[in-house]
Length: 131
Image 1: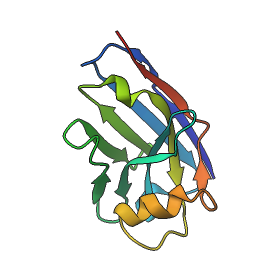
Image 2 (image 1 turned 90 degrees about the vertical axis):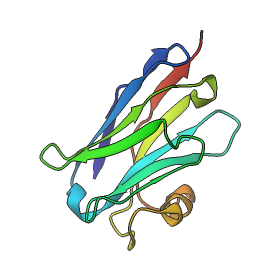
Image 3 (image 1 turned 120 degrees about the horizontal axis):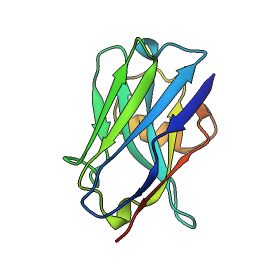
């Protein structure tokens, strides 16, 4: 399994960015896939995830109403549209998936993947929000 992220960059507060994560070695329809972010010196934070089987989604409270996760089965790619970005959104964003995760999108996915002992992770893409 390989996950390749793209779309990070620098933007002013209030701006938008769209991250992409293209997966190989699995089919998004069969898994829950999502995004974490991490700032140096802080714990990794679950941002959002989406279930390929039923399209259910989950968001961290800090990004609800501003971020939207979606997926394109034909491209085997998951997206994270980030609007109204804030300086506190600055972090390295990682795409993650565990093909053996048994449930649908939800906070338990954040807890399980966040342990960092299972699953696959992308290389990360930097998002910087600054004026």
